[in-house]
Length: 254
Image (cartoon, rainbow, N blue to C red; front, side):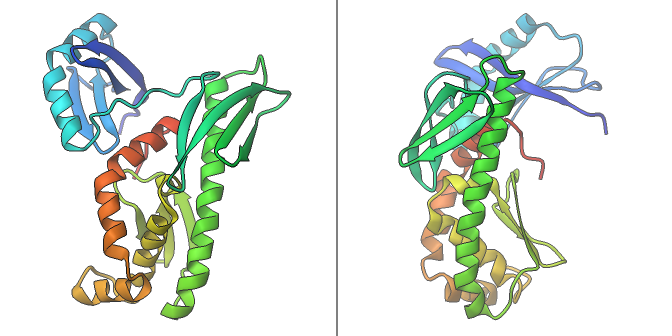
């Protein structure tokens, strides 16, 4: 399958700026808009001029806003900009994101604050920032997941063979045939109880490999408040995944 080059494309339209993923596809024959849980995407045929694409997006702006609203993505999420103060969510709490210059890339986390240190004249500063944030969020989620596993595994009597963390396009977690659990990195932004529910959900699959009533009874045995956490994900999940992509700069693949 041909590879797609992806970046961002912003268009001034009635109602405010629209920010889309631009996917340049070598076999595309026309401009095409699509919307999923990761936001809006504009498929861009080779040779398309920016003015053509802007006019196309403006023409379909009302449709695009409606679809984003249906997925609770109607709030425009601003791009991460090097050197500009920002905010991010960690474990359900809002933190200030600050920047400073230094000899080497680093991330410093203090209560209520995350500071990114980047070299003054380093190459690809935004990519460095994305990498620092991804590593930080993965470390935080792995720590919370380890705590959940330490509590839940003794109650279940079964344990996964491995724990993986990566961005997932639509799922929050999965259990493969080798009994390895994969968690969506976006869970690092959610309250710890939400991540714990997803861990409990995947652990329950070690005993019941479907979503039958017996499975949900097993989930409830591990997490009595699972229904509340599941509803939280239904309400906030789309925005969570979009924020993650903004912070790490990499669209989820699966």
